[in-house]
Length: 283
Image 1 (cartoon, rainbow, N blue to C red):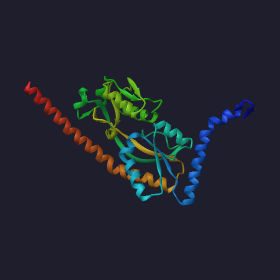
Image 2: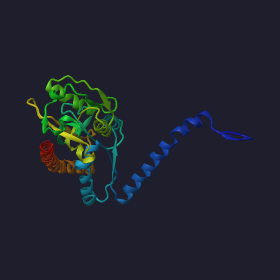
Image 3: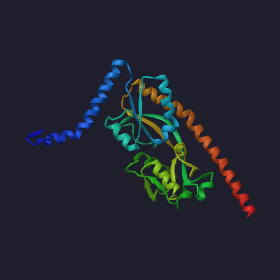
């Protein structure tokens, strides 16, 4: 400090330290919590970053199970975009990140990759779109329509995942606009700005103002991999228990949820088609 008759002010070094003070104090507090946990036998907390669809599809139920089987384990979930998750884990922050990505994504060099499940990818259109009544569609049929893609600056892995579907089909990848999150893409779709490509299970966190249309392909199954990334050599029992529970629940529930949605949508599509036909007769 600079001390004078008029008061006290920071030196240049003090100003520099002040900028880091909050982070230093937070690190100290977290260290004290860890030490208290060790002394009382409580398991350390897990910091888990995740893609939005993972929480409702399997992560939330997995956390509920672990709350019963590992009562001393605390899980702190954080929803951030995929490349921020990966970058943070690479820099030593957090314990686990759960992302959707291409199956050929080169992640094994930096992490141990724990495959959880696969999810079907679907075309997503506004309920007012002419395609909304379709039960299935091919990507080539959408070529002349406005396409909303993930922003590669904020959603690098998700953007690469969707781009890969176009590559499989041999279709030019020409976005008309970019969205920096799943929610912002859904909002743009609902406003009639175009169509998007999303995992079918986004229905779990979204509204009914749009329709999912199954993507058909003769080249390959149009799915995305959902994986958990951990640092190389991670062997803590708490981490392994969390990952195994996520996989167990995902393999049991994701296919069922996708099937149930497809069946409900087909019934709704038939109902709307019949209603439209009756309306035409009445006219």
